Image (cartoon, rainbow, N blue to C red; front, side, top):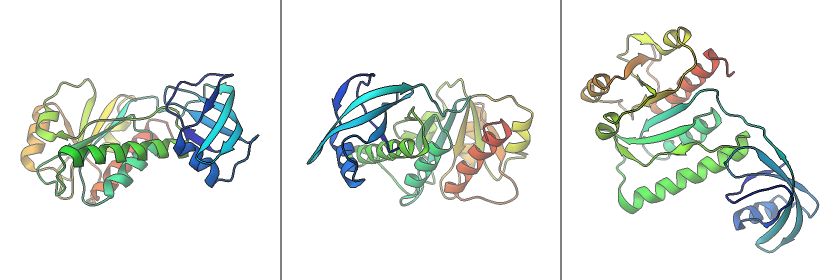
Length: 241
């Protein structure tokens, strides 16, 4: 059954005009009146709706049932990702949603090649939010990860945070997997550097602020690989997979 993120109030028995982008997808999928779709608004659970009318650029539906189904991790998992080159961040955001991230925090660090500010940063933020919507539709999540505004690493790392911050670095002495096996599932923030990693100065600052520096093993992973491998490892060790 097709799933769509519908950012409006939903309730059983209500009839609604679907947003234009959903109406477009309905037509692309060649759905017909009487077909069923799944709708969710990010507030939890999902609704089964029946299409009642399909017109050019417009579609209407009636909500029939509600399911409290959730596909969230049993612990909060934030991915703090320093901006990589090109379109890698798009891929990172998509896969982080699939792996259960509850928050994604873009960071501007010393070795970032990409620099965003002003209108360009706003456009990227909106673009990544769209990727989150699409990824949640695909993977069956009914709650959307929080997308933080792009933050300067030095300012961000000094903010108070109740989550355990883990900085992944080839210079870490203890592997993430070894640490996780001796810890109960808990809220964590995984910090991933850009191409070239965080600078030594940034790593020292992070550790001074209480971050735990761990390694992913003997091989140096690309920035777009490290966070995904770390999230998958935690999910496996802490019983999600």
